[in-house]
Length: 346
Image 1 (cartoon, helix red, strand yellow):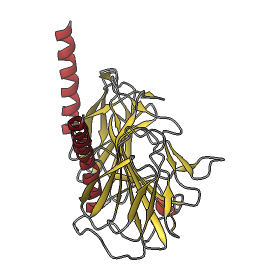
Image 2 (cartoon, one colour):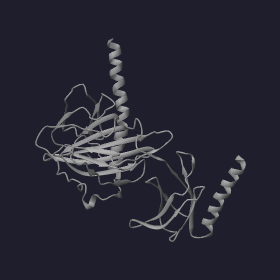
Image 3 (cartoon, rainbow, N blue to C red):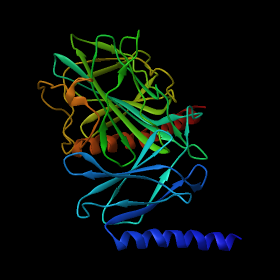
């Protein structure tokens, strides 16, 4: 029985592959990795990538998860979008395929969802304090599922702050500009319904507030953070409200790192005061400080420039996430050193 089923699946895949070769069409298959079964009767859309995302064709999968799409412009770049339980699963394609796309079932809550790494990067030109918060949310659910709800990710900023932008990236995909929705009756709080798929999802939002001298910040992550740090130019002064809440592993890529030692950070990071002037250096600049210059805030959330669209963040984003990833190693090293000193003292 199992052998017959295997042969049937092989012949089905072969049929779609031959169909794609026989005409200007593209064949593929959609598999639900949550159930480990073919995703039957699932919507599949062919998008042409040139000046945007233009829909060229649409179909639904058959009982075996297979599909065939007409390919009007075979020489162009295309994206196949599969819509499963309200979530888009995109895959870039070139040529005629065949392609295989993975989808997951959707749930409202995933227990113990957290960010492996989170950070707040600070800089100031003397008139404005700019804060960039970045979090790497890790979805390790088993069986793998996607979390989706109206307030799937929340942003909390000071009441006198202005939210400039929010960008999100799935794994190593492209950054996408997303417009968050203000939470009614809660000043400085925004909600995002972006799905958190299995694997890593990166959230980065930027806001600014007037700088009039030493400023105390209360960073409130949306999810527990296993390793949280603050990064700032060495020319700026960092002072934790609790002297034992942070340790200073050192300077990397021209930025001073302050690491929270009370981990994981839940609901609110230890408060701290920041003062002084200094800008974050470019990703390829290893200088330990930079001269002050006027900071230009990115388009405000809700403005036409902040509409949901893919963006290329360039080398600076790669550098920032490299620092963020290296933060965990610095944390582990610093915690180990503290533990070893205490053990020797004992």
